[in-house]
Length: 415
Ligand code: ADP
Image 1 (cartoon, helix red, strand yellow):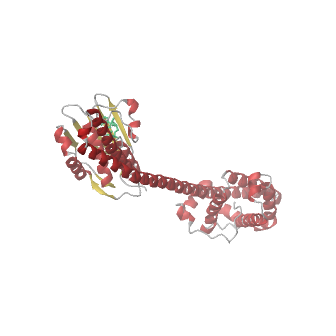
Image 2: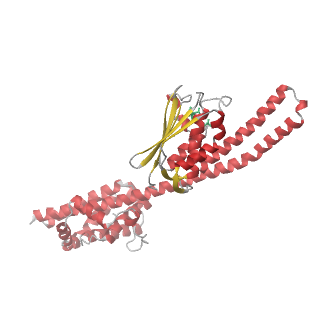
Image 3: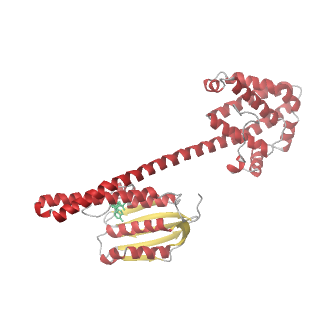
């Protein structure tokens, strides 16, 4: 039902049906499902006389009814809105009784949903408005067809069927508009946070560089004036500044991962892993790591740089948090219906079940920096990359036995 819509005066947005992925075949399926037959349509189209006599009455009763509710009274505070409401309601009901259910007709039903969303009328009103018309038109049909109650009933039922189809369309577009609005808000919030983080990191780096540089100068040129305690403090100062810079760098990496920024390609994971192995060569050699890649890995539709980062983080963790001799890292890929499943298994120190979820969040670490180097952002980066790629990441682990990190990547991207 249109409330406050100017008949003919509303600038029609192009092809709303296409926008939400509904075509006339789908409408036909809905009609079949609800049992709206050609005969029903014919019956409705033969009710022009009934419409002429009764539509004005039905709409005027409807208007009176609306005035008994605070929310709708507010929307109908000026004569212009009332006139538009009455005109659009009449036009709608007359259309129904013309029985010309073509694309333009259903477009108008979707547009009703758009208008309701725009004026902030909640979906519960659809139910109430349609319920009102069903009841009032039902009584009017019963009176008009009192000599032929069966014919009246058949027409009453046909009317209810088309009303249901119309109501569903209006509701669908209402929720579509609402989800668009929400994702726009979300996007702008995310953008706001991103901008803020970028600004913060830029502004923080400047004084940090100063602290780092001047503590280095002090250590180099004035060390002889300090006792051991003083030198230790100065070293802490310098290390803290360096660590802060690393944290800012990792935080920025995390913030810069977005679905939009992805460059998708067909990526051969075997080549990608060769690169990762080269990048981690020092750690692999130093700890005599056994790195096993079971079977050839698949070619995956993904952002090569981001997925390289995921492998690098997971493999370097598997090596870092590992005291076994030799440390062993295995990589297995499996194809499932519509996704690739990749597992990275180690024989490292393992992670207590209590912490297994939280370590995927930024800055969550289970160890002191003196024990294991790191900022605690690596797994959060992996999680963000995988989730923005449409996959999932999780882990299984046992303290003293080892951990397996799993992630999935969809074979085709749905967004
Ligand atoms: P970082 O490695 O910089 O500390 P991560 O986000 O990569 O940060 O990891 C977070 C924490 O999760 C680590 O500090 C460590 O406690 C734990 N962790 C990650 N990977 C493993 C692993 N393979 N085995 C044991 N612990 C791990």
